[in-house]
Length: 94
Image (cartoon, helix red, strand yellow):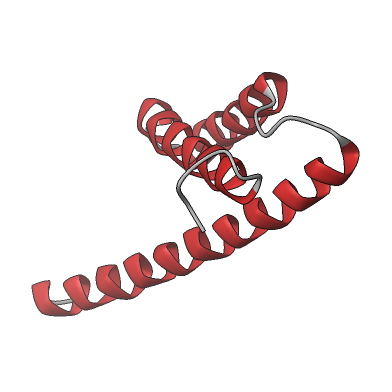
């Protein structure tokens, strides 16, 4: 592959990652509504750790940097928590 072809493939993957983040955020909004019905708070520290641990374990299995994956998933979880807070009326997100 040429440099341009590799960059094109990376751009395609990046677009897919953004689409997956959008889908994850949509599910976080749905989760917020379910948590409201169940009387639960938007943040669940045990669930947060489970999500991040699962991602780190998967990174190790895949042979990629688990520290970097931990950082990415920390940010994804914070985004989801912010989305849930916003949907629950405790934030500034739609």
